[in-house]
Image (cartoon, rainbow, N blue to C red):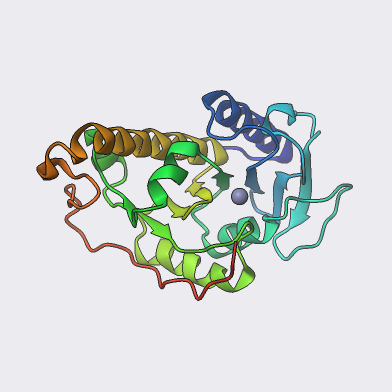
Amino acid sequence: MFENKTEVLKALTLAARRAYARGIQTGSGGNLSARIPGKNLMVVKCSGGSLADCREDGDGWITMDLDGTVSDTGVPTREWQLHAALLKGLPQAGGIVHCHAPWTISWSEKNDKIPLVTWHSKLKWGCEIPVLDIRAAVVPKEELPGILALFRQEPRLPAVVLRGHGLVAIGRNVVEAEHTAEMIEETAQICVLQGLLYQKRDKKHSYASENHGCTDKSVSYPKSKGTGR
Ligand SMILES: [Zn+2]
């Protein structure tokens, strides 16, 4: 779909602007990346910049290889290892979105998955989104094999949630990954609102505890050994 660096930069900038406009990432947090097709290279957000300020001409982005060698000026996001590991380990992934979506973070604090509470999520994902107990501001290197294993174990899995931190969405390209990130936030918002509206009044409507139509095995992730936050 996006065949060269110019097209990749356009897609990244479009995805970054959408994520900022949708409010799934404000300020200078969050980071996006995309593979340059046919090469061991990715374009990833620079450290410290805002998604709102990234530009198609390359401003706010940096090119580096998937082993960590930077072939550009600037400093990559602190999460570059997460992006490189996913793009390197998952050939089907062309783009990654990591953002600190507020409804998703709120839901993740006390729940172990984003359930399929809407028909759209059932049709689109077909499996619940697991919440991983990784308590760190930056995903530690030693957690990356476990995250990769989840995506390999369930090929339909489009994302994972990091408890109290945010979400990590993958896509065939970064625009698709951004759409998934928006949909996770929408679904988490519905979960929170349904909980607020119905949970105390009628325990039958406890959306935190029901299985919402995911008929397949759940993806599970080992509990964190406690890396601190
Ligand atoms: Zn983060």
